[in-house]
Amino acid sequence: EFEPFLAGLKRGFICVSLGYTLSPAAHYPQPVLEIKSAIRYLRRNASKYGIDPDRMVLWGGSAGAHLAALAAMSCDTGYLQRDLNGDCEYSAKPNVLALWYGCFAMEKMKDIWMAHNFMGVEDFSKSEEDIRLANPINHITDQACPVFMQHGTADRIVDYTQSTAFYKRLQETTGRKTDILELLDGYDHADARMFLEENINKVYDFAENTFSC
Image 1 (tube, one colour):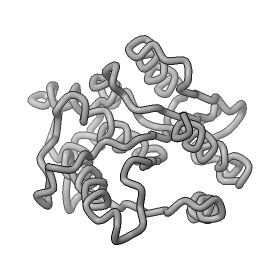
Image 2 (cartoon, helix red, strand yellow):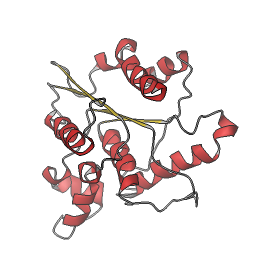
Image 3 (cartoon, one colour):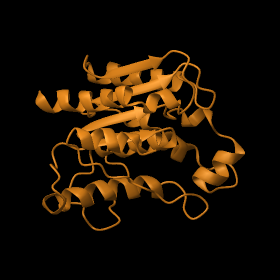
Image 4 (spheres, one colour):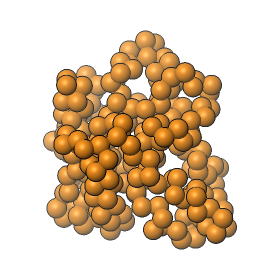
C-alpha cells in the first residue's frame, strides 16, 4: 500500500518502507532485530538521506504493528538490543509510534501455525518465556514513546480488544493523556477506508503535534 507514503510526501515527510524476513527463511526474533537495525541505520545515515534523526515515526499494521510496537517498547527494557550491523551506538527507539489493527496478545495466539511460522518450533511447551517477551505489552514502561492507534470494531482477523488492552496498559504505565486510540466503528482488518488520505493524515497530524511540543 503506497497511500501512506504519498500522503506523507505531500506534507514533507521522508518515507521509508522497512521490510523484514518472513517465515520460513527466518523466525522470531529476526524480524524485530531487522527493524531495530534499520532504524539505527537511518539514524547513522541521517545526513545522507536528509532525515531528522530526532523526528522518526515507526508505523505498522497487523503483524507489522506487533513488530513495530515490540521494536519500540523493547528499547526501554533492554530486550533484543543486539544490532545486526554493529550500529549499537545509535538508538533504535522511534520518536512516535503508529499502530494499526495490531496483534498484542501473543499468549492467546498459541496455535500450531504460530509455533511453526512465528517461533519456528514444533510446539510452545518450551517457549513460554519467549512468548511472554514477544508481547510488546510486557515491555511498556513510563518511558514509552508517544503512540497513535487505530483498530476497526468489526475486525475479523485481530479482535480490536487487543488494541484496547495495549492502550490501557500504556495509559496505566505512563499516565499520559496525549496518546490516542481510535476505534473505527464497523471497520474490518486493513479496511480500505483506513487508507484514504483523510484518515492517513491523522497519523501525520499526531506526529507533527508531538514534534511541536
